[in-house]
Length: 409
Image 1: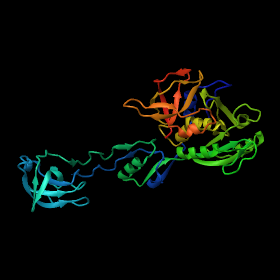
Image 2: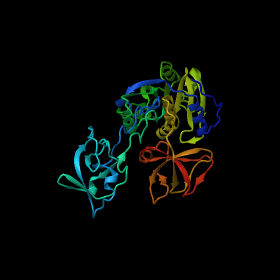
Image 3: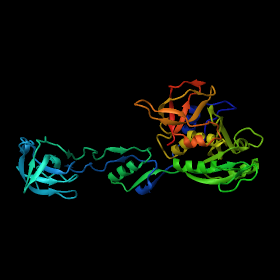
Image 4: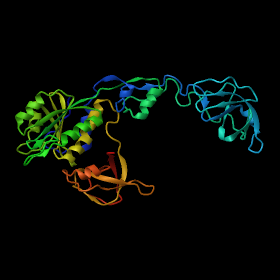
Protein backbone atom coordinates (compact mmCIF):
# COMPACT_ATOMS: atom_id res chain seq x y z
CA UNK A 1 0.00 0.00 0.00
CA UNK A 2 1.04 3.62 -0.40
CA UNK A 3 -0.05 6.69 1.55
CA UNK A 4 0.63 10.08 -0.10
CA UNK A 5 3.42 11.87 1.74
CA UNK A 6 3.40 15.25 3.48
CA UNK A 7 7.01 16.34 3.33
CA UNK A 8 9.11 17.75 6.14
CA UNK A 9 7.73 18.92 9.44
CA UNK A 10 4.55 20.45 8.01
CA UNK A 11 1.60 20.36 10.41
CA UNK A 12 -1.32 18.63 8.70
CA UNK A 13 -4.98 19.01 9.63
CA UNK A 14 -6.73 16.08 11.28
CA UNK A 15 -9.30 15.84 8.48
CA UNK A 16 -6.62 15.99 5.81
CA UNK A 17 -4.55 13.24 7.42
CA UNK A 18 -7.64 11.06 7.91
CA UNK A 19 -8.80 11.50 4.33
CA UNK A 20 -5.40 10.65 2.85
CA UNK A 21 -5.05 7.61 5.10
CA UNK A 22 -8.49 6.19 4.34
CA UNK A 23 -8.21 6.91 0.62
CA UNK A 24 -5.10 4.71 0.52
CA UNK A 25 -6.88 1.67 1.99
CA UNK A 26 -9.01 -1.01 0.32
CA UNK A 27 -10.97 -3.89 1.90
CA UNK A 28 -8.84 -6.96 2.52
CA UNK A 29 -11.27 -9.53 1.16
CA UNK A 30 -14.32 -11.51 2.19
CA UNK A 31 -15.10 -14.63 4.15
CA UNK A 32 -18.23 -16.51 5.17
CA UNK A 33 -19.18 -16.80 8.84
CA UNK A 34 -22.04 -18.49 10.63
CA UNK A 35 -24.76 -16.10 11.77
CA UNK A 36 -23.91 -16.82 15.39
CA UNK A 37 -20.43 -15.42 14.78
CA UNK A 38 -21.49 -12.39 12.74
CA UNK A 39 -22.01 -9.84 15.53
CA UNK A 40 -19.76 -6.83 14.96
CA UNK A 41 -18.61 -7.99 11.53
CA UNK A 42 -18.89 -5.80 8.44
CA UNK A 43 -21.20 -7.09 5.72
CA UNK A 44 -19.44 -7.73 2.42
CA UNK A 45 -22.65 -8.35 0.47
CA UNK A 46 -26.07 -6.74 0.35
CA UNK A 47 -28.74 -9.00 1.80
CA UNK A 48 -32.09 -9.17 0.00
CA UNK A 49 -35.42 -10.52 1.12
CA UNK A 50 -35.82 -14.01 -0.27
CA UNK A 51 -39.55 -13.98 0.39
CA UNK A 52 -42.33 -11.63 1.47
CA UNK A 53 -42.37 -10.69 5.13
CA UNK A 54 -44.85 -11.38 6.63
CA UNK A 55 -45.29 -14.39 4.38
CA UNK A 56 -49.09 -14.37 4.82
CA UNK A 57 -51.88 -12.15 6.14
CA UNK A 58 -51.97 -12.54 9.91
CA UNK A 59 -53.46 -11.07 13.05
CA UNK A 60 -51.82 -8.25 15.01
CA UNK A 61 -53.93 -9.02 18.10
CA UNK A 62 -55.55 -11.79 20.07
CA UNK A 63 -59.24 -11.61 19.21
CA UNK A 64 -61.71 -12.71 16.56
CA UNK A 65 -61.48 -12.87 12.78
CA UNK A 66 -64.72 -11.64 11.21
CA UNK A 67 -66.19 -9.95 8.14
CA UNK A 68 -66.49 -6.18 8.60
CA UNK A 69 -69.92 -6.18 6.99
CA UNK A 70 -71.24 -8.55 9.68
CA UNK A 71 -70.34 -6.14 12.52
CA UNK A 72 -71.09 -2.81 10.83
CA UNK A 73 -73.85 -2.02 13.35
CA UNK A 74 -72.03 -3.20 16.48
CA UNK A 75 -71.66 -0.97 19.56
CA UNK A 76 -71.10 -1.44 23.27
CA UNK A 77 -74.81 -0.86 23.90
CA UNK A 78 -75.96 -3.07 21.00
CA UNK A 79 -73.31 -5.73 20.42
CA UNK A 80 -73.51 -8.12 17.49
CA UNK A 81 -73.56 -11.82 18.42
CA UNK A 82 -71.67 -14.20 16.12
CA UNK A 83 -71.21 -17.94 16.64
CA UNK A 84 -67.55 -18.94 17.11
CA UNK A 85 -66.84 -21.78 14.66
CA UNK A 86 -63.12 -22.42 15.06
CA UNK A 87 -59.71 -21.15 16.01
CA UNK A 88 -56.61 -19.93 14.17
CA UNK A 89 -53.35 -20.14 16.06
CA UNK A 90 -49.72 -19.45 15.15
CA UNK A 91 -48.32 -22.28 13.08
CA UNK A 92 -51.75 -23.54 11.98
CA UNK A 93 -54.45 -22.68 9.51
CA UNK A 94 -58.17 -22.28 10.28
CA UNK A 95 -61.03 -23.30 8.05
CA UNK A 96 -62.60 -20.72 5.74
CA UNK A 97 -64.83 -18.18 7.49
CA UNK A 98 -68.40 -18.14 6.25
CA UNK A 99 -70.73 -15.12 6.52
CA UNK A 100 -72.26 -14.41 9.92
CA UNK A 101 -69.60 -16.37 11.82
CA UNK A 102 -66.41 -15.58 13.81
CA UNK A 103 -63.16 -17.50 14.30
CA UNK A 104 -61.01 -17.12 17.42
CA UNK A 105 -57.54 -15.90 16.36
CA UNK A 106 -54.21 -15.42 18.12
CA UNK A 107 -51.48 -12.83 17.46
CA UNK A 108 -49.42 -13.90 14.45
CA UNK A 109 -51.91 -16.56 13.38
CA UNK A 110 -52.94 -16.76 9.70
CA UNK A 111 -56.05 -14.82 8.75
CA UNK A 112 -58.74 -17.31 7.73
CA UNK A 113 -59.95 -17.15 4.16
CA UNK A 114 -63.15 -15.10 4.01
CA UNK A 115 -62.18 -12.87 6.98
CA UNK A 116 -61.20 -9.24 6.40
CA UNK A 117 -61.05 -7.83 9.93
CA UNK A 118 -59.81 -8.70 13.41
CA UNK A 119 -61.63 -7.49 16.50
CA UNK A 120 -59.36 -7.45 19.52
CA UNK A 121 -60.39 -9.50 22.52
CA UNK A 122 -60.85 -6.38 24.70
CA UNK A 123 -63.72 -5.26 22.46
CA UNK A 124 -65.70 -8.48 22.87
CA UNK A 125 -67.54 -10.62 25.40
CA UNK A 126 -68.23 -14.34 25.30
CA UNK A 127 -71.70 -15.83 25.77
CA UNK A 128 -71.92 -19.60 25.54
CA UNK A 129 -70.84 -20.46 21.97
CA UNK A 130 -71.15 -16.89 20.71
CA UNK A 131 -68.90 -13.83 20.82
CA UNK A 132 -70.50 -10.43 21.40
CA UNK A 133 -68.76 -7.83 19.21
CA UNK A 134 -68.95 -4.32 20.74
CA UNK A 135 -67.22 -2.25 18.03
CA UNK A 136 -67.86 -1.70 14.33
CA UNK A 137 -64.25 -2.35 13.25
CA UNK A 138 -63.42 -1.26 9.69
CA UNK A 139 -62.12 -3.61 7.01
CA UNK A 140 -58.43 -4.40 7.56
CA UNK A 141 -58.36 -3.57 11.28
CA UNK A 142 -55.52 -5.35 13.14
CA UNK A 143 -54.38 -7.28 10.08
CA UNK A 144 -50.73 -7.51 9.07
CA UNK A 145 -50.70 -7.85 5.29
CA UNK A 146 -48.38 -10.17 3.42
CA UNK A 147 -45.25 -8.28 2.31
CA UNK A 148 -46.11 -5.07 4.19
CA UNK A 149 -42.67 -5.17 5.87
CA UNK A 150 -40.51 -6.65 3.11
CA UNK A 151 -41.17 -7.74 -0.46
CA UNK A 152 -39.22 -10.60 -2.02
CA UNK A 153 -36.11 -9.25 -3.76
CA UNK A 154 -35.98 -6.00 -1.75
CA UNK A 155 -32.52 -4.89 -0.52
CA UNK A 156 -32.59 -4.87 3.28
CA UNK A 157 -29.05 -4.77 4.70
CA UNK A 158 -26.46 -2.96 2.59
CA UNK A 159 -22.86 -4.11 2.20
CA UNK A 160 -20.50 -2.07 4.37
CA UNK A 161 -22.63 -1.85 7.50
CA UNK A 162 -21.62 -3.35 10.82
CA UNK A 163 -23.92 -6.09 12.07
CA UNK A 164 -25.65 -5.32 15.35
CA UNK A 165 -27.81 -7.83 17.27
CA UNK A 166 -30.88 -6.39 15.52
CA UNK A 167 -29.34 -6.87 12.09
CA UNK A 168 -28.26 -10.42 12.94
CA UNK A 169 -31.93 -11.10 13.69
CA UNK A 170 -32.98 -9.49 10.42
CA UNK A 171 -30.50 -11.65 8.51
CA UNK A 172 -32.04 -14.72 10.15
CA UNK A 173 -35.53 -13.51 9.22
CA UNK A 174 -34.33 -13.21 5.63
CA UNK A 175 -33.44 -16.89 5.67
CA UNK A 176 -29.65 -16.69 6.17
CA UNK A 177 -27.69 -18.96 8.48
CA UNK A 178 -24.36 -17.51 7.32
CA UNK A 179 -23.23 -14.22 5.77
CA UNK A 180 -20.27 -12.90 3.79
CA UNK A 181 -18.24 -10.39 5.79
CA UNK A 182 -15.01 -8.43 5.46
CA UNK A 183 -11.85 -10.16 6.63
CA UNK A 184 -10.54 -8.94 9.96
CA UNK A 185 -7.20 -7.11 9.67
CA UNK A 186 -4.24 -8.63 11.50
CA UNK A 187 -2.82 -5.91 13.73
CA UNK A 188 0.60 -6.04 15.35
CA UNK A 189 0.85 -4.01 18.56
CA UNK A 190 4.32 -2.80 19.54
CA UNK A 191 5.41 -0.90 22.64
CA UNK A 192 8.72 0.95 22.95
CA UNK A 193 10.62 2.16 25.99
CA UNK A 194 13.34 0.98 28.37
CA UNK A 195 11.16 2.05 31.26
CA UNK A 196 8.24 -0.27 30.47
CA UNK A 197 7.28 -3.48 32.24
CA UNK A 198 4.35 -5.69 31.31
CA UNK A 199 1.03 -5.45 33.14
CA UNK A 200 1.08 -7.55 36.30
CA UNK A 201 4.80 -6.95 36.91
CA UNK A 202 5.98 -4.75 39.74
CA UNK A 203 7.79 -1.70 38.31
CA UNK A 204 11.25 -1.01 39.66
CA UNK A 205 12.84 2.40 40.20
CA UNK A 206 12.10 4.65 37.24
CA UNK A 207 9.90 2.04 35.55
CA UNK A 208 6.21 2.21 34.60
CA UNK A 209 3.64 -0.38 33.63
CA UNK A 210 2.89 -0.68 29.92
CA UNK A 211 -0.80 0.24 29.95
CA UNK A 212 -0.91 1.34 26.33
CA UNK A 213 -0.49 -2.14 24.85
CA UNK A 214 -3.46 -3.75 26.68
CA UNK A 215 -5.55 -0.65 25.84
CA UNK A 216 -4.61 -0.77 22.16
CA UNK A 217 -5.14 -4.53 21.95
CA UNK A 218 -8.64 -4.14 23.43
CA UNK A 219 -9.39 -1.22 21.10
CA UNK A 220 -8.23 -3.27 18.08
CA UNK A 221 -10.65 -6.04 19.06
CA UNK A 222 -13.49 -3.54 19.54
CA UNK A 223 -12.83 -2.17 16.05
CA UNK A 224 -12.95 -5.66 14.56
CA UNK A 225 -9.25 -6.40 14.16
CA UNK A 226 -7.20 -9.40 15.28
CA UNK A 227 -4.42 -8.09 17.55
CA UNK A 228 -1.05 -9.69 18.27
CA UNK A 229 1.31 -8.27 20.87
CA UNK A 230 4.76 -7.92 19.30
CA UNK A 231 6.52 -7.12 22.56
CA UNK A 232 8.33 -4.15 24.09
CA UNK A 233 11.23 -2.76 22.09
CA UNK A 234 14.18 -1.26 23.93
CA UNK A 235 15.10 2.35 23.20
CA UNK A 236 17.54 1.42 20.48
CA UNK A 237 17.20 1.57 16.73
CA UNK A 238 18.48 -2.01 16.55
CA UNK A 239 15.73 -3.44 18.73
CA UNK A 240 12.97 -1.47 16.99
CA UNK A 241 14.35 -2.63 13.63
CA UNK A 242 14.55 -6.25 14.81
CA UNK A 243 10.86 -6.36 15.77
CA UNK A 244 9.62 -4.50 12.71
CA UNK A 245 11.59 -6.52 10.17
CA UNK A 246 9.99 -9.81 11.19
CA UNK A 247 6.45 -8.48 11.44
CA UNK A 248 3.79 -9.88 9.11
CA UNK A 249 0.55 -7.97 9.63
CA UNK A 250 -1.95 -5.82 7.78
CA UNK A 251 -1.29 -2.93 10.21
CA UNK A 252 1.45 -2.30 12.76
CA UNK A 253 0.56 0.02 15.65
CA UNK A 254 3.27 1.27 17.99
CA UNK A 255 3.11 3.51 21.02
CA UNK A 256 5.85 5.92 22.13
CA UNK A 257 9.15 6.66 20.45
CA UNK A 258 7.71 8.76 17.60
CA UNK A 259 8.93 12.17 18.81
CA UNK A 260 12.41 13.73 18.41
CA UNK A 261 14.02 12.83 21.74
CA UNK A 262 17.52 11.36 21.85
CA UNK A 263 16.03 7.91 22.52
CA UNK A 264 13.09 8.10 20.09
CA UNK A 265 14.00 5.84 17.16
CA UNK A 266 10.68 4.77 15.66
CA UNK A 267 10.48 7.54 13.06
CA UNK A 268 14.00 6.93 11.75
CA UNK A 269 13.58 3.15 11.58
CA UNK A 270 10.26 3.44 9.74
CA UNK A 271 11.86 5.82 7.24
CA UNK A 272 14.72 3.33 6.80
CA UNK A 273 12.47 0.28 6.29
CA UNK A 274 9.68 1.99 4.40
CA UNK A 275 8.34 5.52 4.31
CA UNK A 276 7.15 8.23 6.70
CA UNK A 277 4.08 9.88 5.15
CA UNK A 278 2.78 12.04 8.01
CA UNK A 279 4.61 12.89 11.18
CA UNK A 280 2.91 15.85 12.82
CA UNK A 281 -0.84 16.50 12.90
CA UNK A 282 -2.32 19.81 14.07
CA UNK A 283 -4.09 18.34 17.07
CA UNK A 284 -3.95 18.17 20.83
CA UNK A 285 -3.36 15.73 22.39
CA UNK A 286 -1.40 13.61 19.93
CA UNK A 287 0.55 16.00 17.67
CA UNK A 288 3.51 13.58 17.20
CA UNK A 289 1.48 11.04 15.21
CA UNK A 290 3.30 8.95 12.61
CA UNK A 291 1.63 7.51 9.52
CA UNK A 292 3.82 5.50 7.21
CA UNK A 293 4.65 2.10 5.77
CA UNK A 294 7.11 -0.64 6.64
CA UNK A 295 7.76 -3.07 3.81
CA UNK A 296 4.40 -2.20 2.28
CA UNK A 297 2.52 -2.63 5.59
CA UNK A 298 0.62 0.31 7.05
CA UNK A 299 2.41 1.68 10.11
CA UNK A 300 0.65 3.91 12.64
CA UNK A 301 2.83 5.28 15.41
CA UNK A 302 0.97 6.63 18.44
CA UNK A 303 2.35 8.93 21.14
CA UNK A 304 3.41 7.38 24.44
CA UNK A 305 1.17 9.31 26.80
CA UNK A 306 -1.93 7.12 27.37
CA UNK A 307 -4.54 9.78 26.64
CA UNK A 308 -2.72 10.84 23.47
CA UNK A 309 -2.48 7.21 22.42
CA UNK A 310 -6.20 6.70 23.04
CA UNK A 311 -7.23 9.81 21.10
CA UNK A 312 -4.98 9.10 18.11
CA UNK A 313 -6.16 5.48 18.02
CA UNK A 314 -9.76 6.71 17.88
CA UNK A 315 -9.03 9.16 15.07
CA UNK A 316 -6.69 7.11 12.89
CA UNK A 317 -6.23 3.45 13.83
CA UNK A 318 -9.88 2.57 14.43
CA UNK A 319 -11.06 4.04 11.09
CA UNK A 320 -8.22 2.24 9.27
CA UNK A 321 -9.17 -1.11 10.81
CA UNK A 322 -12.79 -0.60 9.87
CA UNK A 323 -12.02 0.57 6.32
CA UNK A 324 -9.93 -2.57 5.74
CA UNK A 325 -13.05 -4.58 6.66
CA UNK A 326 -15.10 -2.66 4.09
CA UNK A 327 -17.07 -0.40 6.45
CA UNK A 328 -18.82 2.43 4.64
CA UNK A 329 -18.75 4.52 7.84
CA UNK A 330 -15.30 3.88 9.30
CA UNK A 331 -15.51 6.69 11.84
CA UNK A 332 -18.01 7.09 14.65
CA UNK A 333 -20.90 9.44 14.04
CA UNK A 334 -20.46 12.72 15.89
CA UNK A 335 -23.23 14.44 17.82
CA UNK A 336 -23.77 18.17 18.43
CA UNK A 337 -23.53 19.32 22.04
CA UNK A 338 -23.63 22.63 23.86
CA UNK A 339 -20.74 23.72 26.06
CA UNK A 340 -21.69 24.20 29.69
CA UNK A 341 -18.55 26.19 30.43
CA UNK A 342 -16.04 28.40 28.61
CA UNK A 343 -13.10 26.43 27.22
CA UNK A 344 -9.70 27.69 26.12
CA UNK A 345 -7.24 25.90 23.86
CA UNK A 346 -4.10 26.48 21.77
CA UNK A 347 -4.80 28.44 18.60
CA UNK A 348 -4.16 26.39 15.48
CA UNK A 349 -4.59 22.94 17.05
CA UNK A 350 -7.80 20.94 16.82
CA UNK A 351 -8.28 19.95 20.44
CA UNK A 352 -10.01 16.88 21.83
CA UNK A 353 -11.33 17.56 25.31
CA UNK A 354 -12.62 14.80 27.57
CA UNK A 355 -16.13 15.68 28.67
CA UNK A 356 -19.25 14.44 30.42
CA UNK A 357 -22.80 15.04 29.21
CA UNK A 358 -25.93 16.17 31.00
CA UNK A 359 -29.37 16.33 29.43
CA UNK A 360 -31.12 19.52 30.52
CA UNK A 361 -34.61 20.24 29.23
CA UNK A 362 -35.38 19.48 25.61
CA UNK A 363 -32.34 21.05 23.93
CA UNK A 364 -28.91 19.71 23.08
CA UNK A 365 -27.02 17.80 25.76
CA UNK A 366 -24.69 20.01 27.78
CA UNK A 367 -21.00 19.10 27.90
CA UNK A 368 -18.51 19.99 30.61
CA UNK A 369 -14.95 18.90 31.25
CA UNK A 370 -14.59 15.49 32.90
CA UNK A 371 -11.50 16.65 34.81
CA UNK A 372 -7.87 17.63 34.34
CA UNK A 373 -6.86 17.41 30.67
CA UNK A 374 -3.19 16.47 30.92
CA UNK A 375 -2.24 13.81 28.34
CA UNK A 376 -1.02 11.52 31.13
CA UNK A 377 -4.21 11.78 33.22
CA UNK A 378 -6.37 8.67 32.98
CA UNK A 379 -9.07 9.58 35.49
CA UNK A 380 -10.72 12.18 33.25
CA UNK A 381 -10.57 9.75 30.30
CA UNK A 382 -12.25 7.01 32.33
CA UNK A 383 -14.97 9.46 33.42
CA UNK A 384 -15.58 10.88 29.94
CA UNK A 385 -18.72 10.26 27.89
CA UNK A 386 -16.87 11.44 24.80
CA UNK A 387 -14.34 13.76 23.20
CA UNK A 388 -15.29 17.33 22.37
CA UNK A 389 -13.91 18.46 19.01
CA UNK A 390 -12.77 22.05 19.55
CA UNK A 391 -11.88 23.66 16.19
CA UNK A 392 -8.32 24.67 15.36
CA UNK A 393 -9.27 28.26 14.45
CA UNK A 394 -10.54 29.14 17.95
CA UNK A 395 -8.54 29.96 21.07
CA UNK A 396 -11.61 30.28 23.30
CA UNK A 397 -15.12 28.90 23.04
CA UNK A 398 -17.64 30.55 25.35
CA UNK A 399 -20.22 28.67 27.35
CA UNK A 400 -23.23 27.95 25.14
CA UNK A 401 -21.15 27.28 22.00
CA UNK A 402 -22.23 24.28 19.94
CA UNK A 403 -19.49 21.82 19.01
CA UNK A 404 -19.25 18.20 17.89
CA UNK A 405 -18.60 15.32 20.27
CA UNK A 406 -17.24 11.87 19.50
CA UNK A 407 -19.19 9.49 21.79
CA UNK A 408 -17.03 6.94 23.61
CA UNK A 409 -19.84 5.05 25.36
